[in-house]
Length: 341
Image (cartoon, rainbow, N blue to C red):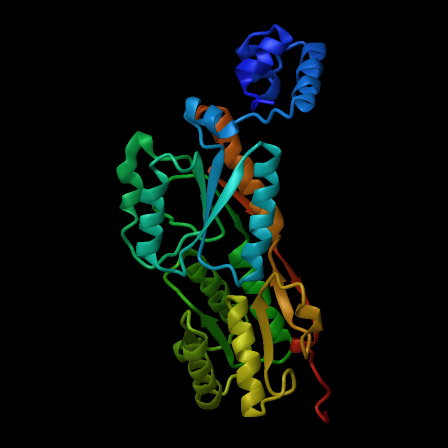
């Protein structure tokens, strides 16, 4: 049998090609019995609709782009899972772009996506540069954009974030309540929106408890595991903190490795708390106390925001910012041990 196309299917049913097309797009203006008849005949003749060609005619890619700094972080994997589920429910696919915290990669990705590759963008920013105006240069032609987690404060677009200041304040306060007085704050990029917000929570918690803020205890780390190993070992041996608050989970891992190599016992010699959505945190030795963000929910809400924009052609007024709540899960890495242990 010759390959079946939409025209031949329409002829077989004595219907117009537009009626066939509406049936496969699940339009509400087509009779249910007619739709059932079309789908049954299509299955009989082994007809597969060409959604790609249809999307081109509609000038839609039916794809959204997700731009993240990294994939190794369990948080971003969970957020992407939430985004993908919402995209699938809306008949869309996702493309994932990883910047590796490289601003130039981010700029190139955004420019590439404006050639029709995607209908909208969900992004957690790289934050390496102060000039984010490249996003505004697209003007009215800028693709619908939603930020999540890491944002550019000078770009006006909807965003989904968590209560980072309050979480950091409570995390630092928890270390203080466990007896810590020299608390190190490990950060990759303190100029980034979340870096600044989390650091301020740390500083204000120290002030509340009348603990002197020592700027040396703010430890600037990098995106390199090898570099972080050296930086953290030096910090632990030279600064001698009794508590460490890490702003991202990979720094918690690096701290555990450094403590193992330096024979520093967690939590006896050093207590550790970290932002992390890591599912195996309870299985680490010792189990890691975490500030856990609702990562999947963040991805879901960011995607819902984007599809509200897409489905309303940008007309619907959305809240500029949605703030979700993180929670502290206390485990053994911050356990207060009796003095004789």
